[in-house]
Image 1: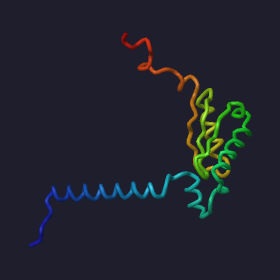
Image 2: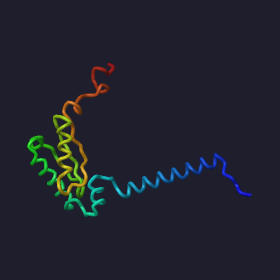
Image 3: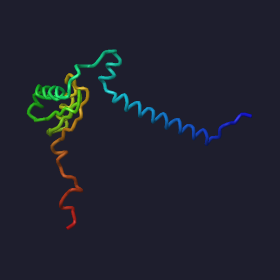
Image 4: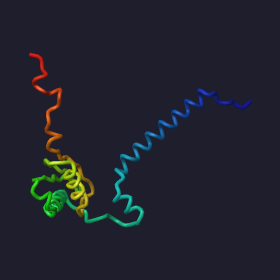
Length: 140
């Protein structure tokens, strides 16, 4: 006689399969890395790397050069810090969100930079005290 699974068995196996699929997808995503427009373009065109592979110190120099070539970003004293080959962190203060986005796009578009970690802060937004930290709201 053939055993027919009960609804609770079907639900249990569905949950087990879904959990295993989620874990396998997460592990594969961590192994492969983030999906970026450059990686998708290279995959679709069958091309190699988008630009030359730079060493860590060269990555920071390439980012600094890209910032110096932009008239609006040149005087902001932004500091690119090399994290690894092709990876740079961008630190500093900008007057508004528009320039924050412009600086991030400018550095990310530089040759040899694969990934950008944007740590830029905006005056008037990131330097205002939070209400919970206001000294006048604290009890005596």
